[in-house]
Amino acid sequence: MAALGWLTPRRRSATARSVLAGEASAEAARKTAQTLDGIDGFEAAAAEAAEPAEPEFPVAGDDLAAAFFDLDNTVMQGAAIFHFGRGLYKREFFHRRELARFAWQQAWFRLAGVEDPEHMQDARDSALSIVKGHKVSELMSIGEEIYDEYMAERIWPGTRALAQAHLDAGQKVWLVTAAPVETATIIARRLGLTGALGTVAESVDGVYTGRLVGEPLHGPAKAEAVRALAAAEGLDLERCAAYSDSHNDIPMLSLVGHPYAINPDTKLRKHARAHDWRLRDYRTGRKAVKVGVPAAAGVGAIAGGAAAAIALHRRRK
Image 1 (cartoon, helix red, strand yellow):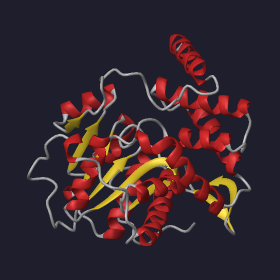
Image 2 (cartoon, helix red, strand yellow; image 1 turned 90 degrees about the vertical axis):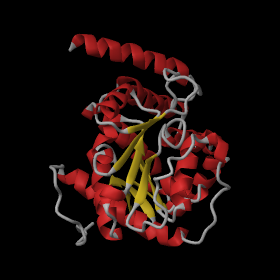
Image 3 (spheres, one colour; image 1 turned 120 degrees about the vertical axis):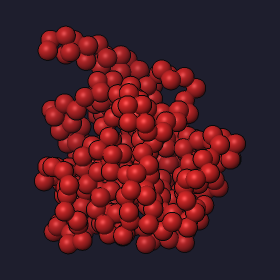
Image 4 (cartoon, helix red, strand yellow; image 1 turned 180 degrees about the vertical axis):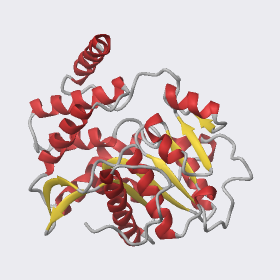
């Protein structure tokens, strides 16, 4: 995919793959948003589910502002890619052993809190191998069913209400996630949001090739995607808001004038307090069990094994 001409000069260093992933995601999001325009979303969450809105923000009628929401554990409990994987497993896209492997990788990322290149590469390759050779339209249709089965009831009402506040103010609202852009787009549409930035898998003639465009939309790549989309949409990032639960999204949160830490992990909570960022926590307990790895197909045992392996890995360092 050719570089997009409307990108502004980057103000910080980023890998070429991060930039490419961000550009591809922004382009896909803008194209998808055009098809979503005019489609009614699901009914908004009850207003009482959210904390009282701060009257000065979001500013109604500010068309230079938008909001960017991380997905996993910010908008939705758990990891979208794992819920999607469960749905594909149910439909016999892959076998039990592959589900266990996929669960192990998700457990590692959630419990380790580190981005080990070897594990990230393994997770990317296994996810791509699952969809290789399948039609994009087929996965989109299945994704609609999987949303109803595994995701709809996992939306945080408080975060949903925050997103609705931006929509009510006349602002666009985008999901920004490492999940496949097709999955993210389905979730955005079902919630009535503008669109989604997500990881772009390469397809030729509507069939997945098993390769990515750039890299997963994670960490710095998310910031690149938001920067690219803001340039294309003519947004003023100082007037925009971003929401996330993870310290991995600090690059994205630092881009905007209104960063929010939602259900934050320990590192993000510390960073948010140090920089006077707003915090919201919609969990019943701040130290609740890590969500995102459902106890299916022996996943509970896998997560426990992952925790033990991670502890051993850390001790060996």
